[in-house]
Image (cartoon, rainbow, N blue to C red; front, side, top):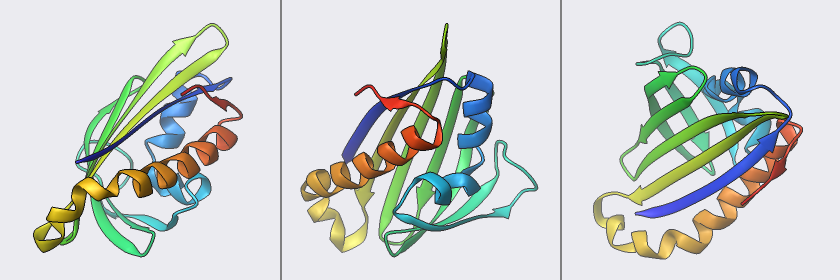
Length: 143
């Protein structure tokens, strides 16, 4: 499984950052690889809400697994070709918050054999998303 981790500091409160990120419809605003994200099951962000996300030409359905405002948000995405597991944690600081983002990606089916080769491509995609997230949160990338 390919893995990507980053931390972004922001002057936003943990609650503000959580509300923005945990509404996965906002992905199109900060992740340049995402062209579409919409709720397809559920009325609002929360456990069980399902988002259809089109990223880099692939569409995955993401199900919200954890929605613990304002500390932790977890989504699990899947399609026939991809599996994704994203954990986003929010830590309040004296000047705002730190958002820790950890994403795992795996190829499925016959493509699964190529999962180890995903590393460099996933890092590039992750770095672009992290830069977009830092910009959206008026913050900076820490790692």
